[in-house]
Length: 299
Image (cartoon, rainbow, N blue to C red; front, side, top):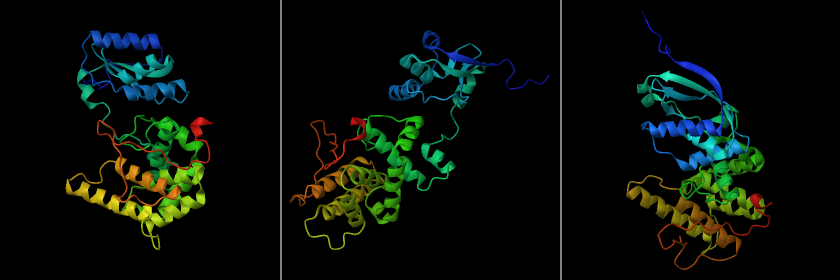
């Protein structure tokens, strides 16, 4: 007699309460079920979505094996406990224990994919700028490598629609001045332009980034010349040690330092653009200078 792969399984819809989630987690720990390490920042990100009403029922199931052991869903359960919010879930019970190694093998749908599906132009750049903006308005380091705030796609979507017009304008401007990407990623130049144009001075932001692409008659000692030199040196050093493009931290810091000198009408220091580090050796992320409007999270 031929058996089907789903024979012996049970599928049902459940309203997952914090108490129920905690019971499942306790049972998982007591049964010593092999699981990947909990990623606390992502638990907090999902909990924020649940608290903010952004969590959606997508049909992704919580999975149990034939021994009634939780084999998929511990991060969601922890987020439910942390948020105190009850969510609807599908629950599948009775799976073969061997399927655990085959879960989550599909290609993850990114926020840039979402924008492309919606036919947005410059989708990759808009998505990257959105991530920078989200960290900035939540007082976290904007640059990816220094970012201390993992972002869920619902959070990205919420931030994008809140600032969709200036984010798109920044992406469009940077693509129109595409020579900049020879020195710095579009995500970095796009985000700094987003802040400079919308919260400092648009005319000065336009001039700075137009001449970032092509310095032309920029006078000697101007921060843009030092920025070109520093970014090229950083890029060459990364390639020399086999690090490819490397982290976004140094290019971001150099771009902000050059902007700050420009907006404060200062020339480049004799030793060039400086990347400051704290006592532990970590790069210090400078604030973008010249804000004439209150940052969004302070309004």
